[in-house]
Amino acid sequence: MIPSSQDFLKMNRKLHTPGVAEVLARACVGVAGLGGLGSNAALLLARSGVGRLVIADFDIVELGNLNRQQYSLHDIGRPKAEALTEIIGRVHPYVSVDSHSTRLTAENIPAIFDGCDVIVEAFDDPLAKQMIIEKVLADMENVWIIAASGIAGYGMYEKLAVRRFDRLILCGDGVTEVKEGVPLLAPRVSLVAATQANAVIEILMELAGRKE
Amino acid sequence: MILVNGKNMEWKEDLTFSEVYSFLGYTIKSPKVLVKVNGEIIKRSQRDNFNIPDGADIEIVNILCGG
Image 1 (cartoon, rainbow over the protein chains, first blue to last red):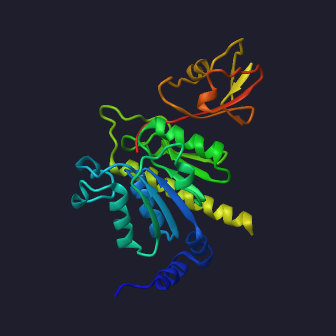
Image 2: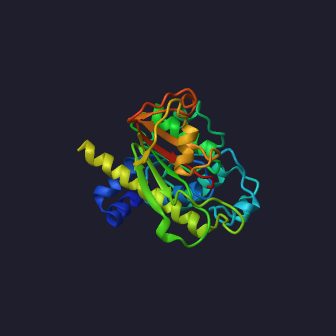
Image 3: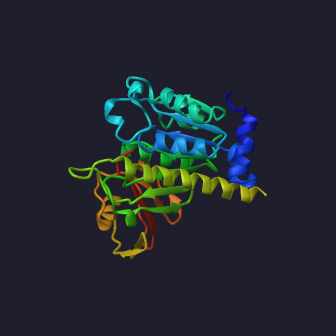
C-alpha cells in the first residue's frame, strides 16, 4: 500500500524536525533546466519534502545524458520534464510537480515560475544562464536564484565554493571550463547540484525566519 | 581609480566593460551574469553605452557553461 500524504508529512516532521519540515512543505522551488544539475537538484529537493516544484526543460533524454543525469535507459526519447516528473513521483508522490516541456525565455520565465520562492539555474548554455539570472535579479522581486558555474572535471574539492551577490547564490568553482580532459562527470556535477539544493534549503529557512 | 571586485584599476575616459573584463582576466566570450556599478545592476543590453564614472565601485560575476 502506498503511504498517504499525511504519512509523508508525519515522517518528514519526524526525520527533518517539525520546524524544517513545515517550511519546506510550504515552499515552492523552480528548477530551470533538467540536466546534470537540475535533475539531481530537483530530486534532492523532493526527497527533502519541498511541497511544490516547478520544473522546466525543452530537451529530450538522450544516451549522452545517462552519465550524469537522473534518467534511465527507458527514458531515452522522452521529454526530460515528463521523465523527471515520473521519477519524482516514484520517490515522493505528493510533491506537487508543475512540469513544463518548454524552452525558457526572458518572456515566459516570470509566468512559469510564478509563486516560486527560489529558482535553481541549471542550464548548460552560459548565455541562457546569464539571461535567467539577469531576469530574476532585475525583474522578479524577492525571488532568489541559485546558479552554478565551474562544475567540470574531477577532484578539486577545495575549489568548490558558494558565493552570494544580492539574491544570487553562485555554486561551483567559477573557473573550471569543459575542455579536453576536463569533462562533465557525474560526481562533480552532482556535488554542485547538491550544493545548489543545499543553498535552496538555506534560503528557504532564512526567508521563513524573517517572516516570523 | 575605480574598484573592480575589490581591486584597484586605473580609470580613463570612455573606459569600456570589455576593458574591465580583461583587467579581471575574463574572456569576452564568457557572459557576465551580473554587473553592478555602485550597487546598481547594469543589464547586458545597457552595458555598451554605459559611462563608467571615475571612482566607481564595480562588481562583476562571470559564468561558465555546463549543466
